[in-house]
Length: 123
Image 1 (cartoon, rainbow, N blue to C red):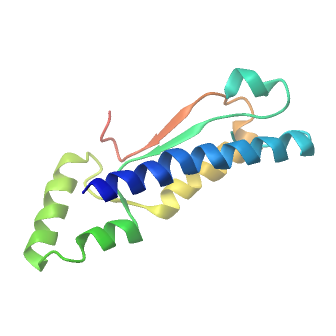
Image 2: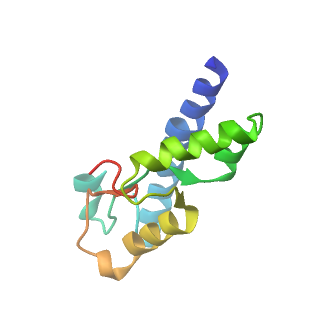
């Protein structure tokens, strides 16, 4: 369990920080781009937003369920989908579509936004 927490922190927190560190350098060198500290960089042509996905069907979820019985997996999904107003687990392509939109000119005035893609779970 502790190993899982350490891995999540390493991937989700440290990984994001390292990506942003080098992405911002590359964006500044290129004259600005989509992505990554909103007030600090918007004047330099860089928009920083975040994506907050909810329950998404991913290989990581499948690995976590690998040791479960069919009944346990069914119960997991039944409990999860009962709490999500959309009535289902999301797909990775749905999260990707939100990211593509944030990076597009259609979102050129969107800065410092947290795009929640969770099927209404947090609504």
